[in-house]
Length: 275
Figure 1: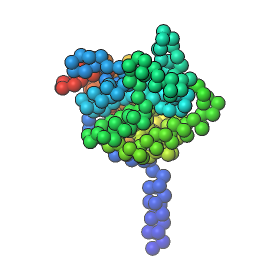
Figure 2: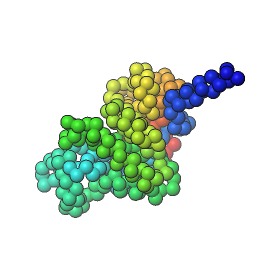
Figure 3: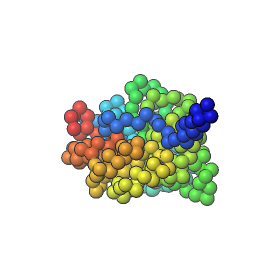
Figure 4: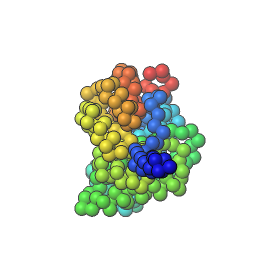
């Protein structure tokens, strides 16, 4: 009797301290639009991270990747660069108020949208897709003195949107900052976390992700991808997201290694094609 009691306690202890399982699947490499989509099937150029680019890629591919930065009012917007061009000037985005950003939208007839608007869009979609949020907002100039508080603000906003809109999509958070991703893990167990790396993917990256309970790695494929490393990642239950694939030839080479996700620039090369 004492033996079974100790066994039960051991099982309970292990289950509470074992790595999380978010039903990670490695059956298929997902093709997602980098910054939404660059072009439509008809060849029209779309503004990166715009609502039109998001909508098009979401409907045509397996999902989307978008970039998130913060305004001075701590509203989160979809934009890639730290600066925005307006009236022949480069303005630092993090120093702009929401009102100024809305005015730029109106004057330039552009379509910079907020993270809240993105979640609102996702809430209306029935098909389950993969949505990766590259949280460039982590580098906000206002909060360099107090990163802990800033990470809380970002995380609480994302969690609030997720809980309110309840999107059917899988939501992934990308960042180079491990401390921030750990904050996401602490507060948002339904979100996947990806550590951004620029060096060629290696075994240490996989072990680092496993050690820190991170779901995956988002890696640069400029110098290729080693299938043995991908296989090790799968053994460790670590997803591999690759960026950025710009042509069909590169796509075919990367697909041989079978990563979890592949971010693509030239959307049309990957729509209705058996790549």
